[in-house]
Image 1 (tube, chains in turn blue, yellow):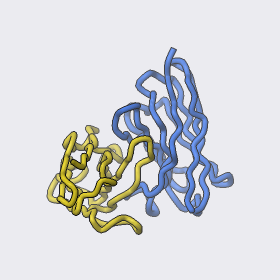
Image 2 (image 1 turned 60 degrees about the vertical axis):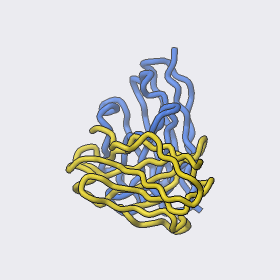
Image 3 (image 1 turned 135 degrees about the vertical axis):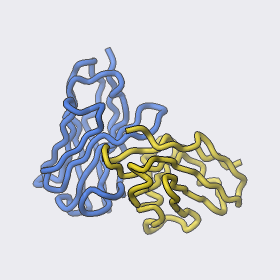
Image 4 (image 1 turned 120 degrees about the vertical axis):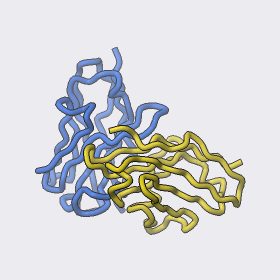
Length: 121
Length: 110
């Protein structure tokens, strides 16, 4: 059974930093691209970032470029999101998602339960 | 990259069919067959319902179907049931982002 478990969500002040983690199990982690998707309270889904199976290729949505860094440790079956220079618009539930195919064209077939990040003074 | 456009809400009576549209551009929906649909119940994580325009994952009811014409993709739910009441989101691969979600549609079963 595929499981994705996020951790690291907390309340942080504007301008602060935070690292989210996602522990994966139930599949061959280093075969798949992984994504972060976020959802502000009461709002819709927003794709944030992806990282290829080998960590060599990353993409970001424009609003987080230069502030967020996605990474992975295949030896630990773990995905990370380093978030710097946080602002109130980054407040959201952050989901770790598994890509459904090899490569990064396609869809998200499994989702974690999310980690809540609240940016507030 | 602007969000794909979905109707804010769609409703129907049990047993009826409803269709949710997802309108993009020639840079996303119109150029790629990588449109997928997700169902989200309150307080729950999204669940994949349709991938690559019209394919259903194992375990998803055949009452759910997807299609695409030009820059618009559609999700149809036939034989509407109370358990289908949820939010639905489309997403597409794009030439720039590389992914963009739709604005989301709340489905109400009357």
